[in-house]
Amino acid sequence: MSEVITEQIEVQQQDEDTSLDATPGGPIVYTDEELTAMRQVRTTLLEEHGIEESRVSRKFLAVATINCKLRVDETVKKITKMLEIMGELGCGDGIDNQLWKPEAKHELSPYLPTGRDHRGCSITWIRGSGGVSKEDERYHCQACIMQYLAVHADAKTLRRGVSFIVDMSNKQSSKVGNEKLIQSFYQSIPQRPQIILIAGAGYITRTVVNASIKLASVFTKQKILQRIHFTSIEEAKRMFPQDSAPTIVGGKGGGIESYEDWVKERLGKLPVPDLSDNNVSKDISLPPKRSSIDDANTAVKEDFNLESTSSAGFTAGCQHGACVDDDDTGVGKLFSNFGFTSADREKSTPKEEFVVISEVQCS
Figure 1: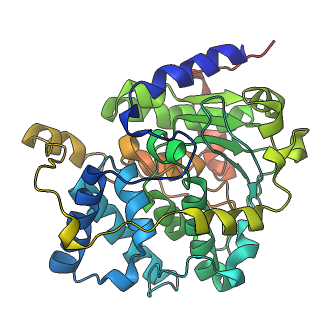
Figure 2: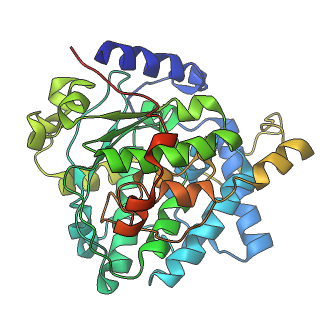
Figure 3: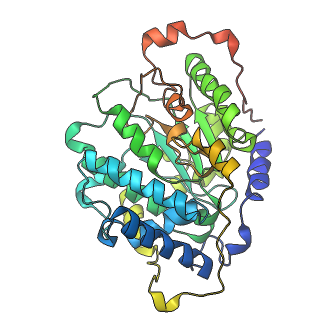
């Protein structure tokens, strides 16, 4: 029943530090601890990687740092990798302070207007379409960054994470040749999904996803895997308040008439953090670094980093039909195969070996 999933989201919420939500769902006021971590990220990017502030908008730096739970090294690694991939996709200038890119707004089309989930956090509903053309690679990167920042532009969503719906009902298998690079870009964006609904997927697609999940369970925490559920489009709609579901499935789209206008407005509301040195507090301590054992365990999952993750491993190809056909064993790459495998691979999949992890049922 939908109530079960709603309860699950509320339980998962307890894993997050909710003490920072002074104004849940409202304007963002960065804490001293957050600002200290952001300053360290900025300094490390410049001194150790030569990445100047002009290539990383302060707004993006803030959202990325908080999504990585103030882990400086992890944030730096994510941003560095992301900028490297963006350079290959025609965005060598990085992310400047002019976040709204009107020339890239057409690449927002896979994102459907939605409202908030039962926690009061933003929902990202992604519906598949065609591939990303070579000419649109730069615009696609810019649109992804715009949507990423816009959806996190309130206090509650920023600190508690989004709900993801991966709408497979309209997926297309067209390939352009840049799918692996696009997938790597998705994986480099720091996100913290609290629930992932894979909606409208057929049996073969579920089999591929379960294969990935089965392997992922060896490397990552069970609480992350428990956030993934298969469901129908109709069931997914009923997981959230009626007003929040997209109009295309019978909801009211959160009252959003134009997703482009909504993104532009939200980008303007996201505050710029004050990273001037004279505001540094000497009493702020950051989360402890991982132990050597943690580092060793993390080494096998750095490519996908499910714990503070990009949603890319789960939403791969859903924005524009991205596909990775390589027979890699990396968990993040295996996730990218769901719903977009080649016909030969689908035929050879040992269906009987995998069990769907969760069938969502609604009354």
